[in-house]
Image (cartoon, rainbow, N blue to C red; front, top):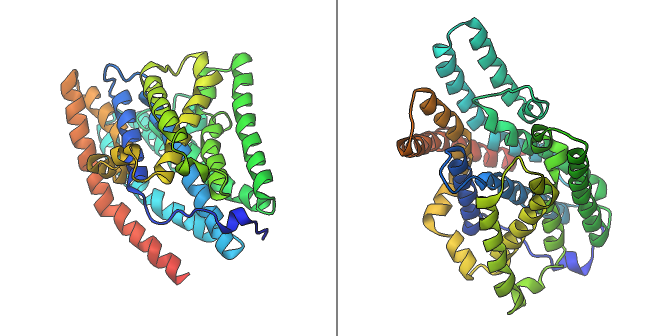
Length: 361
């Protein structure tokens, strides 16, 4: 393992930072407001992209720290951690989905479609079925983003293992080039007339958001961004601009516009990375205190369950004839109920099992 002064003095991420959980909470709230079609939040689908950047950052930092401590990473333990974190809650959702929607299906053809949609979701292929305009899955359509994340989890540790021997600078440059390649490929496909579904749902065309977090992790772990927390001028000026820009994009962005894919996603990635960096570097600053608000941290803790359940719940309510503001409040209440059931029934026990399994391994 190559050791440099930057690695020796690298900042470490230990435990769960409340402010980062608060960022998750804000992101899932934005996504809910978008899918609930609340006026003024037509662009808040970017909550998914905040998740992507944050996921890329956290996964990469943990892998870099493991490599620095042990000289390698355990793929077995990594994939076990991801499986125990993600699969139990997804299986609960799919079980309830099949029981409910198959029971109300009008015929065997509809029941077969529900079973197929559940399998597409279970095997993390929902982004590609949507990308190629198959219109599936429908009620589980929001799971396209889970598919992209899972594909990232499979590929990224393998790629990191291949570039660990590079110096910090070369590693960061390589990840930056990957980011630019995904961005450029998306713009190329857009100019070639690719459908909105193709460029919105494809792993290759959305990987830059995850890679933005990976690049931030490489730079932060290598110590290249240590000056951020010490500067008295940089952060106080840049952070409010980043926060305002992200808020404006959450209101103004539209997913079927060329500007989103040409430059707005890059701006979302940059501003989200700036906010993550500030939360890490200035844990007592105003931004960290805002994101550490108990309600946001609580939503962040439940964010996976909220994301899993909110879309089917909204779909079921509107299918039953619900309309107006009452749908939003009812969907929010039911989503929180199912998210709490998911957390206490499967997610928290699975996390305890994860800890025991990794300690024994």
